[in-house]
Image 1 (cartoon, rainbow, N blue to C red):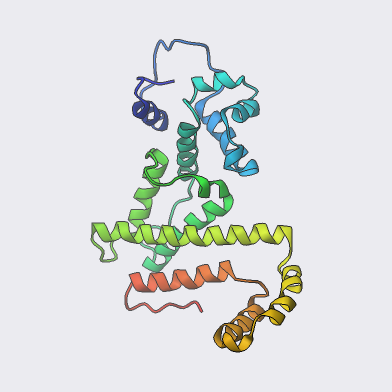
Image 2: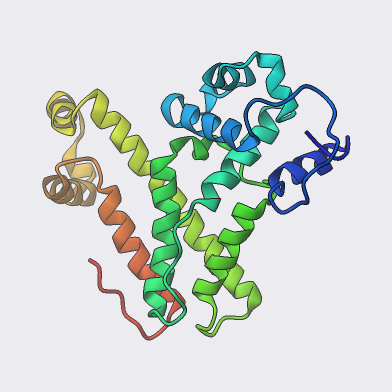
Length: 252
């Protein structure tokens, strides 16, 4: 499984396994699947069951293996998680080329991040701080930097812009996923039918004139407690306008 027994070295060698020369004279039982297949099975399981559903035993069952045999591929769930995150990042579609308008390049970065969370909600449960860098995450970072290169930012500002776009897209994706889960349990119309009349009865509207007025307007407009998709477009336009002075936002 690894060229050394150091945990950091083991994980990094797993992440960068395709960039390293092949091992020779490997000892131990013959492996019947590849590390790539183990990672793909874990991602599929997480997409269906959530991050909590991923375990060494569950992934082994997906592949028809004995639980202990999976440790010949990965040392545990923490390492498997890093491999899963890196594999998802590696599959990112290319961003617009450098010749594309700066606004389009920045928007594409944020949309790609949001779309990834919407496609793989379990990523929101994975600790992002100090996530070990593999080729997928490094390739993504390189592409994202290329998207913000040449718009008049210095190196720290380029990194800051990517961090802000990432945090914005991640937060909005979290809200959108929560809204989708709630809608599957009970429609917004059903929820408001149950709670709206009671709220009108117990809340003194005179004490909350602005909240009552604005809440009524947006409730009628969205037909829901909020509008994650519209909020994303609005926020993204204004973020880009702040990053690119002199280019006013177009979304309302």
